Image (cartoon, rainbow, N blue to C red):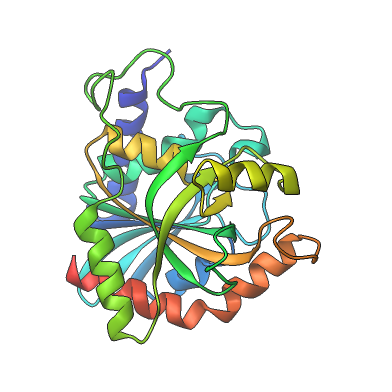
Amino acid sequence: MQNITQSLNKTIDFLKNKSNDFQPEIGLILGSGLGEFANNLKNKLVIPYGEIPGFAVSSVSGHAGNLVLGEIDNKKVAVMQGRIHFYEGHDIHKIIYPARTLGMFGCKTVIITNAAGGINPDFVPGNLCCLTDHLNLMGKNPLMGKNPDELGPRFPDMSTVYHKEGIELVVKTGKNLGLDIKKGVYAALSGPSYETPAEIKMLKTIGADMVGMSTVPEAIALNHMGIKIIGISCISNYAAGISDTPLNHAEVKETADKIADNFQKLIRKVATEL
């Protein structure tokens, strides 16, 4: 059985052949309802996940399942239009494979986005929030198993997973655009059920500002590879118990649609400044 590096090399060979040796500078992973951004790239090439060796296919509404290569104001980018999730039943190593691919493809910085439930009382649906840190409560670490030494160390430091200068850039850019960018700690649970009010109370107690079902495995894998990471959450709803409204995925997508214009302006400006 081939190891992860051999598999990734085959994936990269496929992508280079498919794209005429395209060389991205920045990677983006677009979360629930945020995939529209990829449609506005210049000179874009759309590659469905099902065609890419090693990639699994997402079954979740709001995740198109394409790798889109193109340009943002002359910056070459590789954009994951949607992701696969642990709750879909995939092995955790399948979850991080696309993120690992972005690193192997040459991306020096990866912007990871998601839709999250707001726990911090200062966060309201429609806010954009930079991740300053995370809590991995998914019950699984994607680095378990034999360590691929060629990708990173056995015991990677996790002190500064999210790039401090990147956070400052997002906040500054947001301010210039008239956006109040929040900052906070993201808690990742496995899902697919939303959290109970008691679980949200626990998360608040241990320091979480928002909660979701993604991002952390990808961030761990990219940090392991030495890739700079910027995490941005769209606060799509109040977490359970914060309001009386029942949670549903349609609300997540609806909120993402409402902030799509601001989100795209922010990402475009940040990408050009990186």
